[in-house]
Length: 238
Image 1 (cartoon, rainbow, N blue to C red):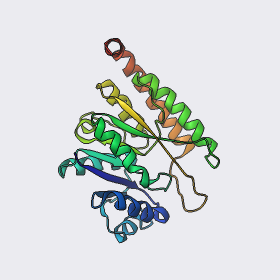
Image 2 (image 1 turned 180 degrees about the horizontal axis):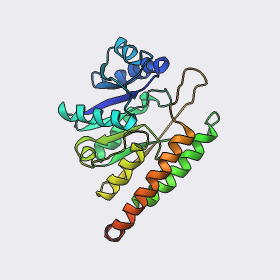
Image 3 (image 1 turned 45 degrees about the vertical axis):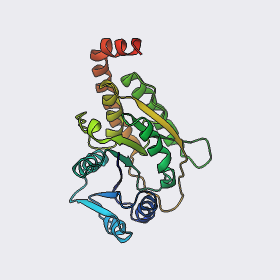
């Protein structure tokens, strides 16, 4: 089993270098940055700390960047991908906690569940997580504790076979639901999170992206209804 750390980045020049370097300290040389059409030099900042970078000529969305990372991993013999957000909210030092879980149960998608009990966590993040957790749990028939966390481990071959269509932030919900429909389990590991007042840039738009999550939830709900007998049978059989 081999894991590749993949960092999707879009205009996070102030934090990408630090995140990439800290990932490299745990995963060297297995770190890849997907520069999703940045215009602020994020890709060059990542290169300066010595990690590989794939450049998109224009912004395609976080989901598209994750899929490209999975494809690069598949082409180079990796079995798993560790996704780390570029904005500095995750702790690369906690990568071994996720990879240890993946080594024990490699067929699962593992989510780093952000501890949001402390101060400094935006109320919008708490609300968005609660809503997405509810609908992802309903649509997948599996309990999901942090459907919006970008700190995850994906098994490469199994995830690519799901045929996800979303290219933006909504990919992170779609992939969990489709994985559950396909019989994959979702695992959880509690991790720390920080929201620095300076340097962190989030491209999540509350109105636009929460509306996108709502539309996707509606579509996935009807997909779940069509699969309900099979999902129920699977639950009954354990």
